[in-house]
Length: 109
Length: 176
Length: 113
Image (cartoon, rainbow over all chains, first blue to last red; front, side, top):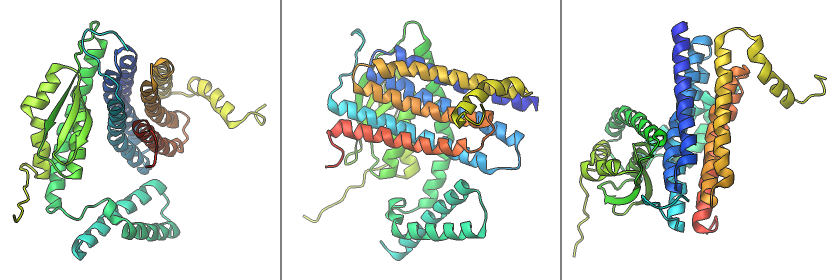
């Protein structure tokens, strides 16, 4: 039981760390396109790891209801497909409207 | 579409809808199960061609190759996030963004979707535009090394083309 | 007093009380996770307010929506109410469709042609 608690704590900690890195990238990067790099990748995996940790906790704490981990597994799959698609859609809209990408050596936008 | 492909499309859509009904309701009454079967049958007869395009062959082999492709992609996702974490937390922030474009041999809807998703989830690149007629991709890369991995190595394009069996462009010859 | 408070105020009061009353360290872990996710949401909100232009703000709203889904799942385990998972699934779909509609409107200037 202590092993399960340790694994769940590690997964939750890694998920929160990646989410925090995504937020810091959103504040630190100098351009719109690079900010989407930080959030579109890190936030997907961070949210997925948090939900995975909660799923493993559910397997060992309440082993009689197995429908809830199936629902959470579908939620993880949906996040992994929907978040990159939304990132690509907003980036395509910005590119076609004419937002200029940032080169090395310019100032922040 | 022929009757065999239509029946296959209806069956696949019905199975997926029934799985979702049972997963999301959680009640195994007689009333709920029968009403679920009726609703799934009506939906899958009316709109089965949204989910399953009836034109491609060898679907089982493509699905098996897709299942083998997914663990490699999960490993790439973890690598991508460690790379982004390194670039964000470094005190000098080593980024050098550029926009590249390249052509591929993929033409189908689902294969273009898989490659665009994989490019967005792998280290350092995000898809901007996709042109389906010639398989052209516009990609924004965050540094020189991930851009080179897409342009020069082309591992991901070869893997996705191998999964969907579209490694060569099919030319239509005309009677002139 | 309890009959007059709404369910929302009861939930806010329970949020600070449950982890000090129950035994076991998993409840404390969930409480710390909820607080940390809320801190990251506050950091993203800064970009939503001060980002120059509309695209930065749309990206920030999408990110806050994704963090809300993870927050709802952890809250479902902290308060021991199993209905939060259905709300999380529904909000994931709403967030996705909202971002796609924003992108389509900003690209074309209208929704239907």
